[in-house]
Image: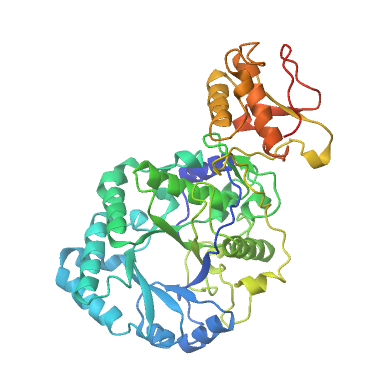
Length: 481
């Protein structure tokens, strides 16, 4: 888990200007990180019983401790293990080391211990020991060792990255990786993940962004609660959670390198229940809200605006408060449980448990869609829905600029499915032949076809709702379809 520098925190402030509506797909999966930087934790056997009692079926550990792997054996719990950063050099330089490591730490326990993935290193790019150059060779050698023991089809190899690996994250749709890492790390890593059928591991912490920018970031936006959302000027999507904006920035960065097919697993995310005085937002209430609403968000459908069919697996950080961790107070208070196994706060981990969970999540409106079913621009800010008023219309903003108006017009008449026949040459609403008039007709057609729902008259700020019929020559604007 990496604390972001001021420059990267500024990047996350910009994420506030990114989009999102939750898209319901098949359910994702919830796991938990089992860190052990503490001297007061229960035995591994008790921990496995704790996981089972809360129906947690996935766990991620930061090593390959024999006591832990033996305790998980036969439990049905899937586990992701870690090859620590300090072993990257050896794993990269000597294939024989990789063979021995896999034999000792994987083969010796599998399949009774259901190891499903190996995290090679953790947030390697911010490792002060400068181990980045060893990452890809180490990943390849560990995979080759799995091939030797015929486990490569069952166990994935990847490496968790911190969000500071992004150069750009605003808007989310324009996310990109740091240039110095693209050719040396990300392109070969993503190619390796594609060839081996693996996925990118990502650690994402909206708390860090909120903590340092609480004057401009809505707490409700960070906690998945009801909020007006923020719009990505690039895609027009409206986001109702900073988590989705962060995840989509990574998806966009992969897409920029033509790796749209690579899946993602969120290997760490969480919110501290306690912090120092300057750690704004660290509280039991907020931790419960973030993690509880995140579980609801994932189990009710794991997609994001940029990847609506993605079924995310998310690992909460962390299982216990860890009293030996360095850094601010928050670092020792990310746990879902105290060392005595009592819950720090009560949240569900299963779909069944969600029935009795009452924190208010962010809204989940259906995305505006065109004739092809693709998601269109949405916005909830200040627009008036059909249920709130009588007749309303959507018109173009003359202050939006020609480029934005033209792009939005093209979308509305294309993917948006608006009826733009009346503004074609010689048709009833061709005159006046101005961009603003034509855009207004197309925007209104899109707005009316989508039932005048809140958010369907925005187009990245290029449109707004009016309560009087627009007047463009003799053209009449419809009020319904």
